[in-house]
Image (cartoon, rainbow, N blue to C red; front, side, top):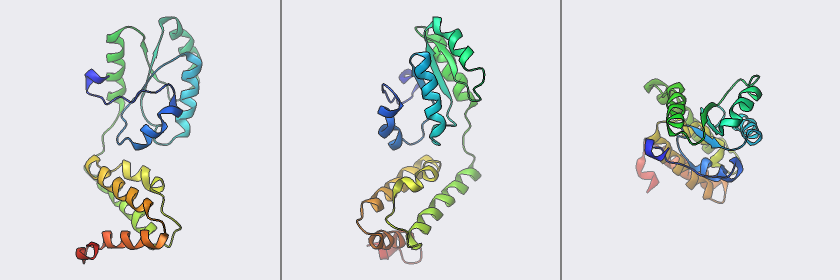
Length: 185
């Protein structure tokens, strides 16, 4: 995977990869090398996490487990692409198929998601919400253009560190004040 230019998050299971996945921007594909039962558990867990549910998944299995996995996946709507363990060409082809099924955001989608994320931040700031939690807006933020997602997520993280809703609102209002950018200084 690294040879294909991917940043790899290695973990024994989804739970142990949790914080790394939460902090990652733009996860492209999930590749898992484990037994059939563990793969089925991983598929169930992925469906429960809206960041991971739509991602393509490559399941790297032992050749003997391939038929068992395919049999168990008959009723599964979102099927992983199966690669055979120990065969580099099989993994490379599976990752290629997974990525070809992925779609990139159009300029219009990027603009709409950026606007939605900024609106969510503004509403949190002016809406008198209790303490701001960066995770609340994270999904919309991460779907924004990568260069903007990093800076907006960083700003949201800073807001989440402030101890009171009033302080968070004041900083957010100053940051969102396009009429008087000096208010932030």
